[in-house]
Image 1 (cartoon, rainbow, N blue to C red):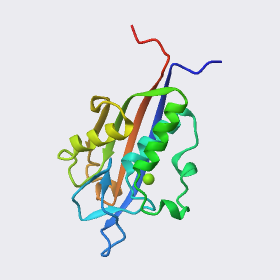
Image 2: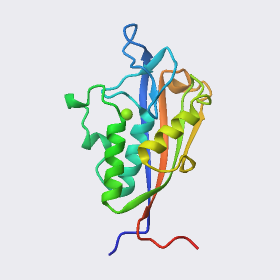
Image 3: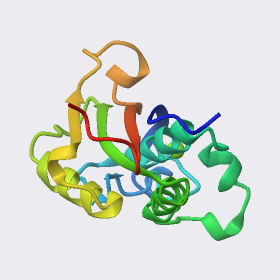
Image 4: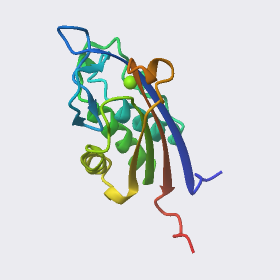
Length: 174
Ligand code: MG
């Protein structure tokens, strides 16, 4: 049994949002390593970057490795307010050491406010930098939850990601 030429991974994350500290317990809202201007932010042990968390899990999932919570437990004080690029960088390292390359990453961020459109390019470029792939291979889509449920009321944000890995010695597609 060799390793498959392609592996697909799915990642998901959700964080509750509260007013920024000290009015609430919200941390500054960071998505894909970019700070968003908002009066609310995620409740999180790390920096609460749900987009990086979901991409990390998509890559780990594609590899069939333990998930982000198993590798970086939120009970570990070293991860308090941790820059989530550390988690994502570790997932990228594992992709490489399994002799895969990241073909592309596609993410959907479900967030009522703020609007993602003004931040998308910066997020995409920063994710591409951390993933060490071209920005054209990273896609970030913003959706609202149409005011439905807690996400629609701005009380949480949710991220869905799929990522495709390709075996480094795989023949290029015809
Ligand atoms: Mg998370």
